[in-house]
Image (cartoon, rainbow, N blue to C red; front, side, top):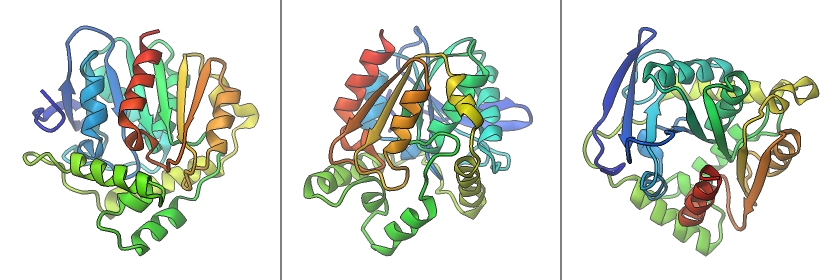
Amino acid sequence: MSLETARTEYLDADNVRFAFRRLGPTAGTPLVLLQHFTGTMDAWDPAVVNSLAETRPVIVFNNLGIGTSTGRTPDTVEQMAADAEAFIRGLGLPLVDLLGFSLGGMLAQVLAARHPGLIRRIIIVGAAPRGGEEHLLAVVEDAFAKAAPDVRLPLFFTPTEESQRAGRAFVARATARSEERDPDSGDAVSAPQAKAIIGWCARKDEGEATLRAVAQPALIVHGSDDTMFPSINAYNMFKAMGNAQLIIYPDSGHGALFRYPARFVAHCRTFLDE
């Protein structure tokens, strides 16, 4: 079973129908993936997801209002995290690891801080802490203005030939699934999610309370040239968390995990297996 072929399942919880897919073995602590701004299950990189699923259970899902999940997309990170918790508990999972990318990394922080008994370890990629630096709208607008073959090329990757080559390979992998693909997100998703991200970063966290409440081991991965959420965010998270590791990949933008999929998976495995 692979991300490209896994069947879509549905879970009814709290009057919402969550769409999700499961990969990998049945034994072990499940790794739940939390997606980026406007992203669906089909926006993940199969090279990352399939490799992670070789050694552990992996679950990808669409939060409220995303793809084929029902409900209305909320406009706060906290409510999105609460919805993700409802999904995890609805599956009857007593303990999980989290991999949150971008917006998903913000949800991972909230979930880890609020539910230490549910979350074992967290991986945060390309995210910002509460009160962190963000340039979401400017970067997205600039990426669309470039009229690239796929907006993710300027959005997730640096302009170097090596990075763009990696970007084209990522886009080919991410568009390989031909059946049961999630519909692309529209304004009903992008508007509240943008409000959530901007609000999260605009509101300072007194004493970095959220980060300091994360007692679980954390792996923070960031791109050297992430223009959406500059790498100072990753350093600040690393310094404030009590048990965090920090890795910054060279010549990489917002999609650092897609720039170096094999390297990223190796780092994740080492961290999760400790």
